[in-house]
Amino acid sequence: MFGDKQTTALDPARIPAHVAIIMDGNGRWAKKRFLPRIAGHKQGMENVKVITKAASRLGIKVLTLYAFSTENWKRPDSEVNYLMSLPVDFFNVFMPELIEENVRVQVMGELDALPAKTRQAAAQAEADSAANTGMILNFALNYGGRDELIEATRAIATAAAAGTLDPAAIDADTIAAHLMTRRLGDRADPDLLIRTSGEERLSNFLLWQLAYSELVFTPAYWPDFSPAALESAIAEYQSRDRRFGGIDSNR
Ligand code: FPP
Image 1 (tube, rainbow, N blue to C red):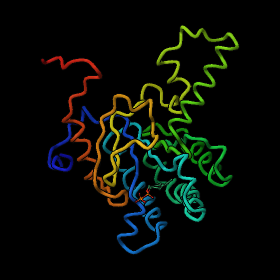
Image 2: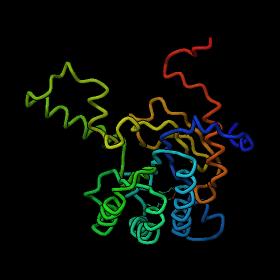
Image 3: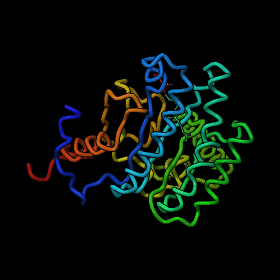
């Protein structure tokens, strides 16, 4: 069961290169404290700082965080506006520390639909950290897995119709090269997906890329998800037997 591996020492040679997190439970964290939902998001943003540092120090190479989905626009305007202001605050305050940690920021999603201030903050953070060579902190912002696949399909179909791509040559690499994660190269697919708050679904996150990822679900609400809980999730990952559809070579 998740959570009982906290005392297990991690094998430094098998730290997952790419960890993706669905940061769920901010609203319930706030409700439990009789606070407005946005107080949960603010605390969630604070925890992004804590977990980013912890992940970088553990040797994770890519940390992808689901910060806003294409479905989150359905929330009340006041909450959407607050969520859109978070990247601005986050990068304003936290950028010097990210630079110090050698963390490189990337942002993926339908960025054209974001308010200008959010888009500009994301672009500035990418530019300011472009020379960093450490962990990539990859925010999924206005991201949806199905939309990503629709866009990729359109681009591939357009190339095929134009005669620049042979339909018979379309393979998994062709699809991967048209996804928003293409910038991550051979680290595009998460090794480990963590979802907080006890929900156990993918919610339109990285539908292609999660095909062979290990999934870990933890009951903690995102603002309470601690570095120790991250280590515990990695210990759970290290206890799993990843076969990618093959068989264990020891059997
Ligand atoms: C899900 O919790 C969380 C979100 C929709 C927003 C996640 C955003 C953050 C954690 C902050 C992002 C920070 C930066 C720097 C971009 P929920 O509101 O669905 O919680 P609930 O299910 O308990 O209502």
